[in-house]
Amino acid sequence: MRASIRRSVIFTSAAALVMAVCGTTGTARSAVPAEPGDGELQFGYVLPETGQLAFLGPPQIESLKFAIKTMNDAGGVLGKPVPKVVSGDESGSEAVAAQSADRVLAAGVDAIIGAAASAMSLSFIDRVTGAGVVQCSGSNTAPTFTDYEDDGFYFRTAPSDALQGPVLADVVRGDGHKRVALVGRADDYGRGLLEATKKSLEDRGATVTVAETYDPKAANFDQVVQKVKNSGPDAAVVIAFEEGTQILQAMIEAGLGPDRIGVYGADGLRSEELPSLVAPGRPQTLAGMKGTAPASASNEEYVKDLRKFAPKLKELQYAPQVFDCATTIALAAEKAESDDPADFVEEMNGITKDGDKCTTFAACKELLADGKDIDYDGVSGPLEFTDDGEPGQATIEVFAYDEKGQLQTLRTVVSKPQE
Image (cartoon, rainbow, N blue to C red; front, side, top):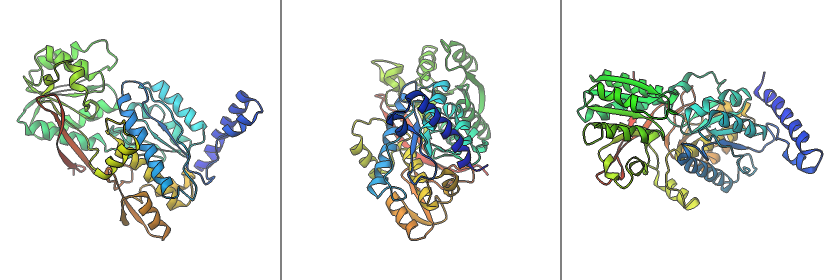
C-alpha cells in the first residue's frame, strides 16, 4: 500500500494516545500529529544528546537547526516556514533510540535525521521506513545499509566504510607496515570497517595477524589486547568508540603504544580530547597515532556561518553531512511539490546529479522554480547519490596526533568503489 496510507494508521493511533493521556482539552488537539502532505515539512531527529557518542550530538543537532534556518531565510519549503525540529535522544542505547524514534514518529514528522551510530539506526530503521517516513543519517557508515530492505526510504550522506577501509589500508601500508592486527567493536560499524580494512590490507600485500571483534560493554579489554600482542604485529588498527580509550591504555601498558608500533584508528576515535582521555596530563603519549574519517569542515563559508549560528560548538565532525541530509530532503520536497514522503522520496537521488549545478538551498530552489533539473553539491562535497541512496564517492580525511597530542589533518583522499 502507499506509504501515506501506512502513515495515517500510525498517526491515528498516536492521536488516540494523546487524547487518552490529555483528555479533551485544547492541549490534546494541538498535539495531534500532522497528516502527510499538509504542506508543512516537519523534521525530527534521533541523535546522541547523551551516551558514549554525546560528543557527536551538538555538531549534528546544531547543523540541522542551521539548515532549517537557511531554508526559512530563503522563504521556507513549499511556501511555508519549516517548523521547529522534533527532538529524540539515541543515548547510546538501542532500546532508548527505538523509543525516541517512536515518539518522534508519533509527532507526525515527514523525515527523521539520524541516528549517529549505525547500530542505533538499525534499532529503529524498520519502524521509520515501514511507516513511510524518510530517514537520513549523516554519520552511518556501516556497509549494511547499502543493500538494506528499506523500501527506498533510507538515505545517508556519510560514505560507506567500504570506501573508508581502502584508504585506511593505504595509510597503514604507506607507513611501511606489513604485519597488522585489527580489533573492532562487535557491531555493524566495527565488523563492516574491520572487514573492509582487512580485505584492502591483504590486497596490498600485508599480513593480517589477527582480526578480532570485542564486546564494547566488556569490563576490560585485556584479553583482546593480549591477542594483539601475541600476534606480533608491527601495526594495530583500533575500530572503536568511547571504549577505545581503555583499549589504547591497555595497549600502551602492554608495550603497544605509538612509540613502539604503528597505531591507527577511524572516525569513532577522531576527537581532539582523545589524547587527554587516554593519558591525562601526558597527551604526547599518542603522538604519531593516525587514522581516517569521512572528511568534514572543508567548506570554509559553511564552517564560518555555522560557528556564527552556534558559537559554542567545538567538534564539527559530521555536521556538514547532516546539513546535506536536511537540504536534500527539502529540495526533494520542492521538486515533488509535496511534503508527503511517498512523493518526495522519489526525487531524493535525482536532485544530487545530472542537472544544473547548485550549492545552496536558495539557488537550487530558484532553479527548481524555473522548471530545471538540479545537481545539488552539498557542503560536505558532491553527493551523486547511487540508486541505494548514498554517496557514489567519498572524501576521506587522514588525521594524526602530533608531538603535543594535538589533532591534525594530514590530507584528504577521494575514494571510489573498487572495480
